[in-house]
Length: 87
Image (cartoon, rainbow, N blue to C red; front, side, top):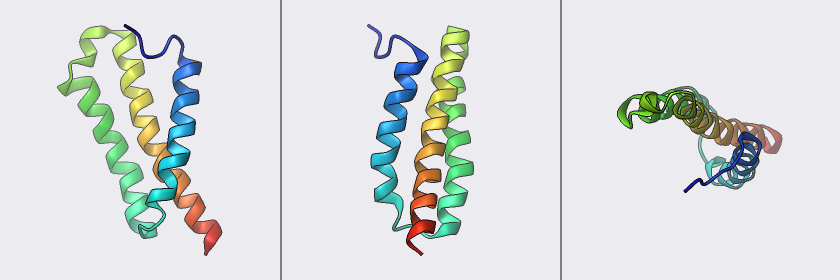
């Protein structure tokens, strides 16, 4: 069972969901958004690649870990951008 059949499909879904999530995070301050963007994305990669044993899946596990980290980074980056436009 595959949730996504290509990286493009996965990235497209990440892009749309990160836009939805970004609106929710605009209530955070700039510093919190910036730190969350840096720290939480790295933690997500580490969690998927190490704790969930993604390294055992080779290239596929690495891709999932990278895309998951990018999703976290993107939602905070978009929230930061939205907040900056509003102020």
